[in-house]
Length: 283
Image (spheres, rainbow, N blue to C red):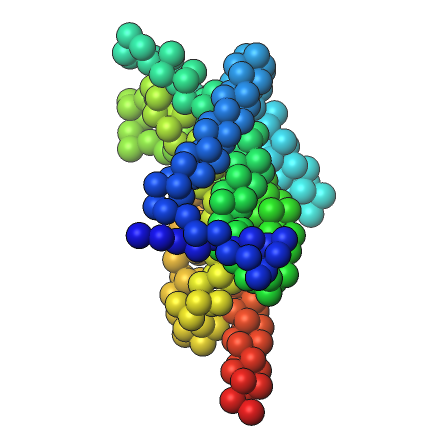
């Protein structure tokens, strides 16, 4: 079975490639991505102590920027200490032989992926690019910049907003004063890393819906129809991971809601453009 990979330097030329040849090209891009991730992992390993103690364990410290900022905002708004989060009294332990080493490997691999993300996406884009038309390439100009930018903004949002709220909530939650929260390090890192990384991926929502709208899978009408359910889901999740005050829930939920609204606007523009194109072709 043969596949076409268009030559973008000369649209009239088409190179026929077999399935095996496509796999060879894909393997080359994957290998380069793995190499980039490995280099990023080496960088993380070199600065491992700083990354683990000051960054990943940052939300467990009382002087974490999010906590101090909210407390200063509370005093500035003359709300007393209503926005100041409770002191985190947290103990952690490693209860398996390889527990700390497993965490170490996860941290350097995920950290390497985060550092190398723009290059990894660029490799993916290079693989998919020859199959696109000139018009599709024009419409997707700057995609690497926007995907990378949204990814890192999401990472920062997950780290400075979602993660500290989540850690603070569960650290201070107790069924009885006799029950102490003593977490394992695997449990802690398996919570904060997916939250942060997942937030970076969640911020790709506008771009994902843009391409889904281009192929007719979703529409602005459908997103508007399910808007109330999307809002409810976002607010419920935000209410679960944040302290029981309105401002905290707003801080956590508003950015996600804005992403949803931006996605609706993008889908509407795509639909208008596609409808105008269809009308011109009909004429």
